[in-house]
Image 1 (cartoon, rainbow, N blue to C red):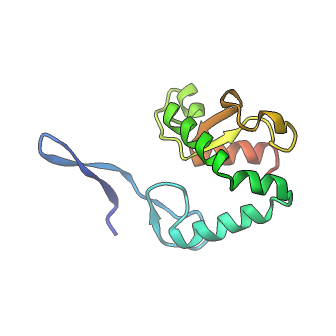
Image 2 (cartoon, rainbow, N blue to C red; image 1 turned 60 degrees about the vertical axis):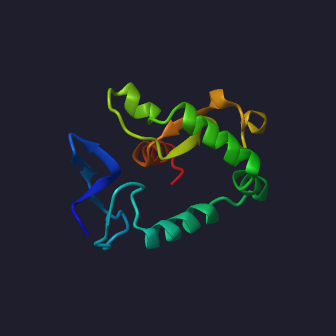
Length: 135
């Protein structure tokens, strides 16, 4: 696997530009290199399952799997494609996900309100959840 992942078809002066250095998978002991998301494909599924198992509230789980949420999330990502936290820090990083500023189960009526959502990169999202003890 190459150290840099190349853009697909994006060139500058006829030369394909490298994207960014690949990073090791965050799963302990995994040697795989990844370009985004923090985990290789195998461990991304494990972490996703672990994360979903932490959501005991079935109403909340149904919401996150709903077409309604998928549409609102995609709309937010199109409107704010960069990580909003990184942008505040003067960095330009693509957002990987959409985060609710307030817990869905605490403020159910605002779950689809775009003003209550934030586009974040995986790193910033994990920092937020670690700060509030949600990981």
